[in-house]
Length: 238
Image (cartoon, rainbow, N blue to C red; front, top):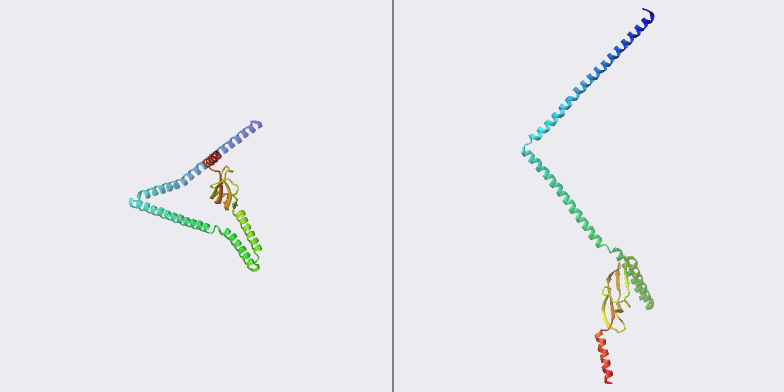
C-alpha cells in the first residue's frame, strides 16, 4: 500500500470514529430527556391525585350534610340578612330625622341677616327720638326720620329684592292694585289709578302686597245716554 492510500484509509477511519461518537452522544441526550420526563410525570401525579381526593372529600362532606343541618344553615343566613336589613333601616331613619331637623333649623334662622338689618334701623330711630327730646327741634327730627326711611327702603331693595312701586297713572291691574274707592270720569277710556293710599311691594318681581288705590273709571254708556236724553228733553221744554 502506498503512502497516499494509507493516508486516505486513516482519514476514513477517523471520520467513522467521529460519527460513532456523535451518535452515542445523541442517544445519551435522548435517554436523559426521557428520564427527566418520567421523573416529572411521577412527581406531578401525586399532586393530581391529592387534588382529586380533596374534591371528592369536599363533595362527600356536602352530600353528607343532613336536611336538619342544611335547614339550620339557611336559618342562620336568613337571620343574618334580617339583622343587616334592620341596621340599614335604622341608619336611614336616623338620616331622615337629622335632615328634617337641619331643615327646620335652617327655616327657623333663615331671616337672621334681615333681622340684623332691621335692628340697625331701630337703633337709628332710637337715636333720632333721643336727639329730638334733647333739642326739641321738629324740623331736624323730621329730616332724621326721612333719612332713616330712605335708608331702610334702600337696604330692603338692594339686599333683599324688596321693591316699592308707585301706582298713580297706571292702568288698574287687579294683580297689583286693590281698589278701595272709585269714581266715574267721562275723560278716561279705561280704569286708571288716580290716588295711592298705600304703596305696593314686589319681592323678587312677584307682588308681595298689592297697593291700595282709588280708581277713576269710564262712565257707563247707559248713564251717558240717559244724560243725553235728559238734556234733549230739557231743550225741548224750552
